[in-house]
Structures are given as C-alpha cells and as structure tokens.
Image 1: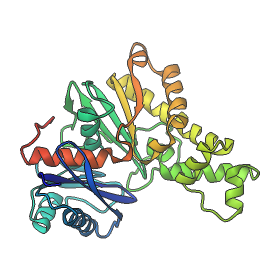
Image 2: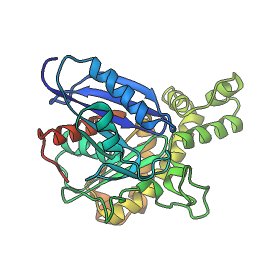
Image 3: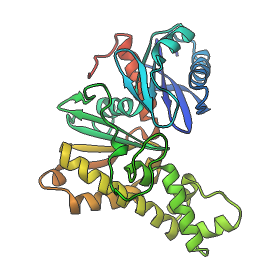
Image 4: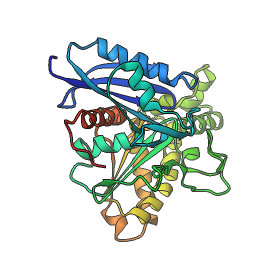
Length: 321
C-alpha cells in the first residue's frame, strides 16, 4: 500500500474501531480498543497511532465518529449520553496530539455518509440510518443533505419515545420509554436472559444454567442456530424497532431506512418483524415506498464514513453537508 490514505475512527459505547482506509474505501488495517469513558482522547490516539504505524502510506487526515452531539464546524462534542463529553473541543485536542488534520462528527452521521455514498442507500436522497449497538444512533438525509437542526443536535432517533410508561432510558437521558431502552445490545441481553429464565429447556436456558453470560452476541448466535427462545427475544426487539420506525416513516417519508451497528448481525430475524409492524401501522403511501435494509458495511459503516469525512477534510471528496 503506497498511495495516500486516511484513518477512520468509530467510537462506540463499548468498543472503538480505527481503520486505515484508501481512496477506494479498502481497509488495510484495523485497530480495536475497548471504549474507556474516562480516557476517550487517549484511547482514540492509541488506536490511530497503531493504524498509522501499520501502513507505509502517507496518512492525510483522521476522521472520527463519536456518539455525541457534535458542532461540526468546530468539532466540539457538546453532549453525550454515554460519555462525560460536554463542551469538549475534541477535534482540536486530537489534532494537537496526532499532528494531523482531524474532522469530528456524530457516529451515526458518519455511518449515513458511508451508506449514502457507497452502500445500501446509494442513489437515494431521503435516507434514515439507525446504528444499533450499545445505544441507538440516528442519521437523517433529506433531499440529499444531512439534517443537523438549529444547533447540530438533530438525529437523536434513539430517543424517540415508543412507550411513555416504559423503563428509564440508559445513560444521561432523563426520559422514559425511549427506543434505545427497548432496542440495543443491552436490551437484547436483558430480553435473552428473561427468556432463558422462563424457558430453562431452551438453548438460552441451557446456556444460562451452564454458567454462560447471556449477552447480545450469544442470543444472536443461538438464534441463527435455530433456538426458538433466542429467536423470540430478537423478534421482540424487532417489534419495538418497527414501532419506532413507523414514526420515522410517517414523519420523514424516507426512501430507505438502513439498519447498522452491532445488532445488524441479527439480520432478518430482527428486520422482518420490524418490517411487518411498519407495513401494518405506517401511513400510506410512505409505508409502501420505504425499503428497510441492513447496512452494506455492517458494523463498519461508522468507521468507513469517518474515513470518508477525512477524505473530505483533505480535499479529496465533496462534502454532502
């Protein structure tokens, strides 16, 4: 690899992924870290330095997607549901530490950029991306432009309320019954454990009895192996996801809703129940026109979108706003 490249970083609530990416969006090295809420800048710098040392190419810029409200022009992280990032000049701190141009934006907006330019939403101009992992991120494209709102705080789609009497939302959100409280990796683990306890003869039940920790990845694995309890757990999340997406379809009339993040690994076990709810509950004609699809780049959409942002910062790619 000798051509110039960039480094894209996707900071999630649980883990961080950095990738050395060329202009064809090929990933040449991946660096993984666990997210450290008390050392966000240090963790990003460590991963970027690993990725930079793994290539002989010129690294032109770094793009970083973070699960925060971000002021894109300044790269300031204004607020965050899962990290103590309030009015933190993340772009400038990272640029000083790395000695490279840095661009910072919301992680779901980065995933939106990757899927809109190169992935499952290519050719569409009205797009919603939901990244479902530790939490739920959202990106909105309306008539070909990113919707950012008055202060850059738009797109918090994980915090639309689907049950006003529902459980408290995790993190720093003061609300109850948010989509994120019902549809996320932790939510899948909770639902899976409840199913395991209720159905001790199921695959989930036997796993729990055998001392295994019931996690989202375990539920997903057993569901793909055919365990009815695990499949029912994912279907429950799909039902809640469909309720949330019904509101998004009615409000935004998107051509396509792209589902990314770690829970994309559940595939149609999650998406088919969600599609059924949208088909049943959303208004026509929007419900008949929208496509609900998995992200082309899976849980790497955020990292690749961050790389695309870095190419924009380096002047090699036109911004979509």
